[in-house]
Length: 505
Image 1 (tube, rainbow, N blue to C red):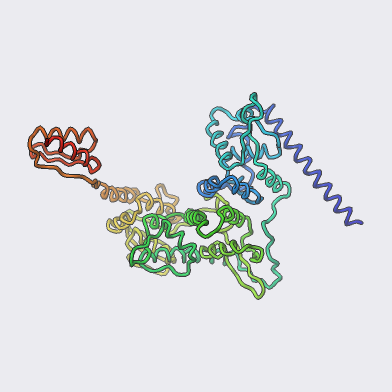
Image 2: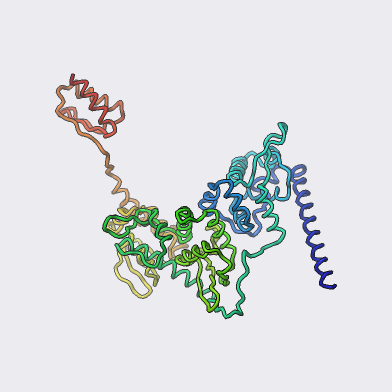
């Protein structure tokens, strides 16, 4: 009897909480609509986004653009997952996030003119961006109730219902971790971070070695297709070679590299008979797991297990096998999937010191970092914890030939500057950055253009007429009036030939 009474009291509390929550939302909306001045709800005023939830700026560039490109049916299917709704809410621009939270418990459509009243004139551009984003993601649906009110907005019912459920029920995990009493020996967080770093470095090293003609080993066929999309090119009789994008990829920040791989992995999902919406849903759901906890593989589908094996190659998860069960342990790379690059942990400590004489010292024991420096610098000698190298004209020309730009090299040096150099302004000596840009500009002094050369004109009049004709078509590159010679672009060669043919008659 006592347990029944306790359950009934809990149910009453939950119902009371829901009623109060809904009443408060209505009250808040009424106050905002009728009493607060417009500037109080401008994009700079009400700090609803100041609640401690991670931003997802990088997802808005990759994941959310991909989500917005999905069909209406797939989007609605995606919104059936509570955790996807929360991840997408985090990814929205601040003003769009406010609109969603303000309309979350309102079932009736809200006129667009009413929403526009909340924004100051200088915030209209942000307002349009927010509305466009919400419509692209099918979070907002446009309806016309009557001619007086015009266009109205209402929340996607599936998205609204699941987001309400998440807010009311609180933070619930996608799946419960396994009991540590079942003989599971979990690695410490430090060991897990070391494992993720080693896996990621091993993966990048294989990518670099492939550029030297070596075959990739230990990487799944799914990941191979990701590389072959833009990072590697296959030539006849030769092994895979790094493309220009591949060399540029190696100089990216770790998070940017990860997002590039994930984006391409999703893009070719249909080639593996995997629904992109299901894959996006699982990847975003993975980011809500707890780092270092073990989760049973039996709770996953076959497609999700295959995906985890691919992600294990990148160090996003660690797979372990027990006597009876198998499980996966998410690393920090996986749990940061829905976190913004700007807010995702502290800036990593740099290791490069650049001197004004173009000598560079890298305090590192990593073979990967040594190979990355080799892309644009000459390695002179290597000690157990120090790499001594020099940036030379020849080493930079080699980097430029591979498609790496001067700005990418300078950005890499700035992002990886040793703490003693990072505090200086500038962190890289100006004479070094200026010279790197000058050496790149040397290669751009000559521009190759497909052209045709004409000479042996029968008369001066024909030559001058041909020059004027080429000039009118915008194809004249060079002329020598004394010797009656002419160079024109290939694009106007056919027109020039017809013109000269008519002159010959």
